[in-house]
Amino acid sequence: MELRVGIIVGSVREGRRGEAFARWILGLASDRREVKAELLDLKDWPLPSYSFREGTTAAEQSYPPDSLAGRWAKKITAQDAFIIVTPEYNHGYPGALKNALDHLSAGWRHKPVAFVSYGGFAGGARAVEQLRLVAIELRMVPVRDEVNVKLVGFEADERGRPSDPLYAKRAEAMIDDLLWWARVAKQGRES
Ligand SMILES: Cc1cc2nc3c(=O)[nH]c(=O)nc-3n(C[C@H](O)[C@H](O)[C@H](O)COP(=O)(O)O)c2cc1C
Image (tube, rainbow, N blue to C red; front, top):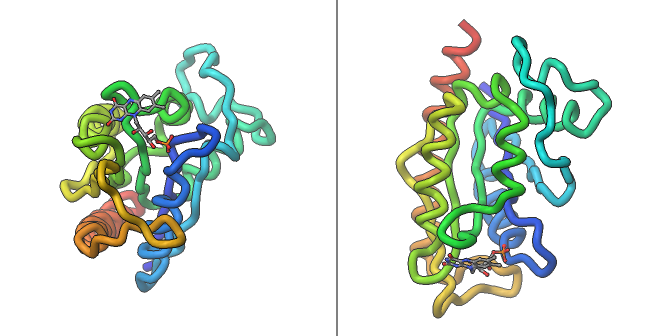
């Protein structure tokens, strides 16, 4: 069963660290059999602040298909699972990420999501705790395993990947968990 995994880059800041972490995870996910992973970089999806009229249909069904929101909805709907790569901003996660999440409902539903965070001593864990609540409201399946990269004393290779092998070990466990749920959820959605 082919599984499409969207890796969302939650930081759009000039000089952001997040892209290197997202590319690291993209490499690990792409090495898995039957996985087609792609980067969904919010910098490439500069969605305006959510401003649509609330309706009786799911928001994404009312977007003009060629609009940015319409294309974002189509892109998300095509995925089977997600890995959100997020920094911690003021003990939360970036506003652009929340805006991108709010733009859809059905497209996220019954799909697993895993989290890679980074930040100071807490490694961005506080941002992930908040995202888990949002994911549940979107009827997603947040998986237990996560990666929290502590930037204090952090060492990376020339491509910005963590030097400490413990991070890759945690990431592989997280991807195992995500793909298990992705298969189960896809079967469920298709039946
Ligand atoms: C607006 C802002 C708020 C931040 N707040 C926190 C915080 O609450 N906790 C933390 O651990 N790091 C915090 N940081 C540090 C970030 O985790 C660090 O700068 C990280 O590299 C940001 O991700 P980015 O480079 O991908 O944008 C903050 C950084 C910014 C820019």
